[in-house]
Image 1 (cartoon, rainbow, N blue to C red):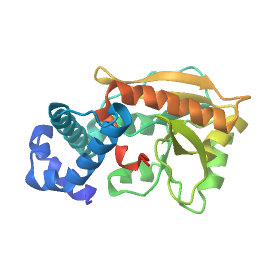
Image 2 (cartoon, rainbow, N blue to C red):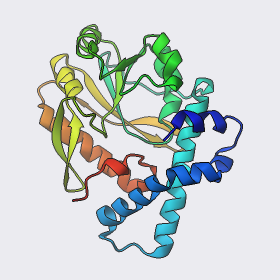
Image 3 (cartoon, rainbow, N blue to C red):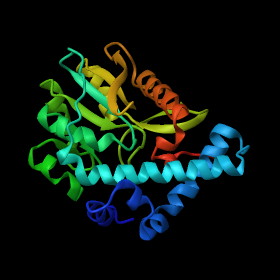
Length: 247
């Protein structure tokens, strides 16, 4: 899917216009159908009525449109995050529509964002040395150096990238792979793990834990427990349903 294309065309549209755009609907339809299947099986045991199904599809399509629109306008956003006084902080996120709106705040705080690609829409963050491609050769070295110095780190842990370390954990009773390299470093450098989620138009730290003395397995499971609670609140807001195992 050409995210860059939809990001460009969304700049001249409202979120509602984007989600009703023919090309957008056709391109995202596989994501929507895939997500509906997984939601029905995971949360409802296939007991999904037709009205529930249609309602979810519309809400999930709106969530994707909001995400793309936010990617197109994040540099103008004024969203902030109330941070704890803890200096060593790892902000653990997940794929929800408002997540791009935190990028300007991350840039302001000189946080290091862990990303899986050097995407065009992250160009200004990369130029400010605020992104780290976890697939790059120097990723481990730079991450260790940054965390040793106490720099704020942020990343999404609801999807594992091939070729990177992971820890198995349970999410809705199924085994998922949670990125583990950064969790191990959180423990080593005594970082606080802060879990963020959208709340009434804002983004807040809704859970947090001191990682010192914990194991990677414990942290991975705790993260997934928090994630599961958020997905239960609004399943249509999670944009990684396509990666959730259902077998």
